[in-house]
Length: 200
Image (cartoon, rainbow, N blue to C red; front, top):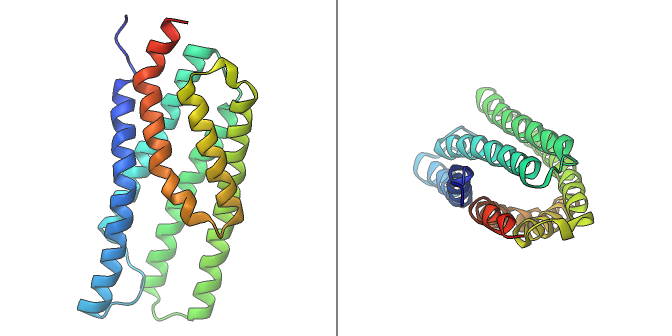
């Protein structure tokens, strides 16, 4: 059996799965500590944002490696455009999100109603957009699911559920819970998919 060249991607997917909830928890702690200990109640950029930047960079790498695996193992190219869209979405979401926090912090105090509307419009647009992309990715994978390993099929099902939750916006917290689940399945794909394909 040849060496699994996706091993690094697998371990980074594991890091990705751990990093996301850690960044969320640290973000919550930051906000509570800033408000209670330092009376800071405006948006700010902190360690949690740095962790999310690292998470985004790793997520982009792992999804690109997933695309490469689909190309090499299955000669499957139908997800190329959707994967590129999801990558650009992640970059834009990160940049705009940080930009909003920085601008709000610079010009604080701001009209709270205006801030709430801008944030709500941004989050709604972002969630609906990525939800549609996720659903399309899942649909394309499930159309030819017989050609893929069980792990890729599992990834498609989780992506479908996450996409539906994102499109509803109200169920976005459930979609966030599925982020590390999706990353763990990606890790399994990178660690195990080669072995399964070799014995087909």
